[in-house]
Image (cartoon, rainbow, N blue to C red; front, side, top):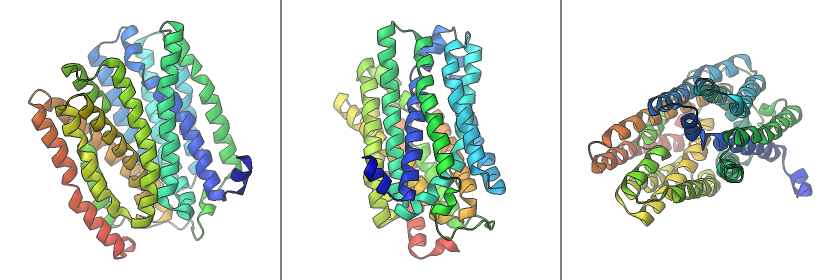
Amino acid sequence: MRARLAEASPALRFVLIVGAMSFFADLTYEGARSIIGQYFAALGAGALAIATITGLGEALGYVIRLPSGRQADRTGRHWPIAIGGYILQMAVVPLLAVAGSWQVAAVLVILERVGKAIRNPPRDAMLSHAAKEMGYGWGFGVHEALDQFGALCGPLIVALILALSRHDYQLAFAALAVPTVIMWSLLGLARRLYPRPRDLEPGVTDVPGGRFPRIFWLYVLAAALVAAGFADFPLMAYRFTQTGTVSGTFTAVTYAMAMAVSGAGSLLFGRIFDRVGIRVLVPLTVVTALYAPLVFLGGLWSAVAGVCLWGLGMGVHESIMPAAVAPMVPASRRASAYGTFTAAYGLSWFAGSVVIGALFDVSMGVVVLFTLVAQLVALPLIVAVARARAGGAASA
């Protein structure tokens, strides 16, 4: 294994190191997020406080990506900005063990989202330089697969710790210091081995790029529409609780299944993206949109199938969609592009989830209709982007 890694290209090694970083990062913070609701309740927080804290954290976590990406492009200091974000994000998770009150825990949870927002745009820009050689879809797909594997392992490890310790939340959070230290070690290794990831992409210069092309904004709009129709998993879990379709224990299992499908899908369709281009998003968007009627209107096995389609959509959204951004914009503005793209995507997802939640009191049929329309309306825009890319309009 070590020999094979040594024989791999520098670009692939960089993708694997960053992927390993993401594995331990996701193991840490997704492990914590899997029990944060219960922890807040144990500290005395009410439903309104929990919803406000998590909602504010998510909103800030997307808005801050805009200035983070622009600052990285303006200064060229991608590594320092990414490292600062990683340190902030990872440091606060084990500190939840000594929060003492839900107010202090709330600050830590919000800071975790802020740290992630700071590090993501420069990290994705650096990753794109390595992915150019191996194929954007494959590069981002490999990274996402490792990322999602961490998201799968984290909650399972935390659940095991809680089971063995009789629900000692402090111990569970404290144990997450171990993957935190491992992640920081990998971060230092990546910085030392690849001080200038842009060198992994031949022909990249430091000359500032111009405005984003029209095709990029069309793509941002399409992604935002798709995101608006993509419900948060807690809403689906809430529906399962309402109907008794899926038990509480099996709901956690279905989430793990979704993460597994997400990782596998990012690898498979990342390869396909490199061969056929962005038009692969058209059938994938149609197929993954079917998660809604299966989850919200069906029985047990329909719900399981729907959650798996939801997981497939997650893999597509986290790998192929960002992979498609890189060739649309000047290399010197990729961090800004990723900041803009992910901010629009995340805020639209947040807004769409609020609408879906409000429509729960109307009818499930209306919920499903909203999710389908929001995603399917994006199809003509994706087709337009694919045609423009095929015609060479991306450089216009």
